Length: 265
Ligand SMILES: [Zn+2]
Image 1 (cartoon, helix red, strand yellow):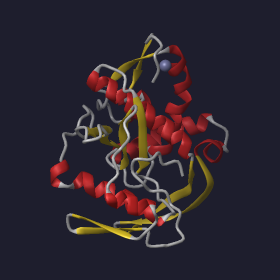
Image 2 (cartoon, helix red, strand yellow; image 1 turned 90 degrees about the horizontal axis):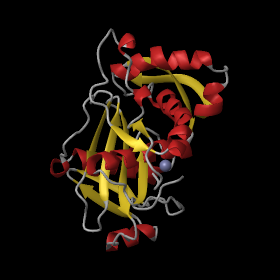
Image 3 (tube, protein in one colour; image 1 turned 120 degrees about the vertical axis):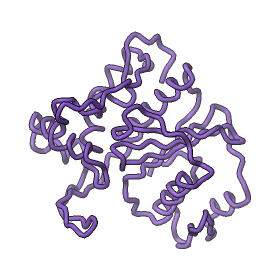
């Protein structure tokens, strides 16, 4: 993250995401965890964010059993230690309860607006850490992120997300999945493209997905004609495999969906 000397080790992703044996009937999901050196400043700042990340993603609908186990054990313990308004104050705004139909069953769920900035900060740390782990050096540049587990209200953002997901599912992008405890966390890095951009996908608990790109310092992505038309707000359709993805169908939309720009909305 910075040029200061690494004085401690930090887990990537945070250790608390990996179940403790006592919470999963003695099973071990803490094999060969990734650690990277960290300066004191960055390590000290992180522990609150680690807990935020665990509480915010473990119980997301679509996660596997381990996410569920983490929710009913470690997350619940954390919530009991906090004040009763912790969820609504520190995790999601405008919380509403409801149900969601999954495979024909109605499940009780909470809906709300996520703390997007804080999520970006957490995942940015993880991506820089993974890059260091892979290359034994700092990544000099920016990270652009797209949170796959959030339902975007703007149609173009949601379409773009599905576009990314499809791209990673396609044959030519079948990339090696890394991570020694893949049911908790796994990641994929693409080879750098012509502009040096490195696409990636992170998956937590089998269902919580984050897409993004590492953009090297001083590298300006080259724009294709399609990109330009897209940024002008004209309707456009991409075909990927057997699926079509339509953007800018609503002329009033000022949705900023370009993949190479930092998505902060
Ligand atoms: Zn630092």
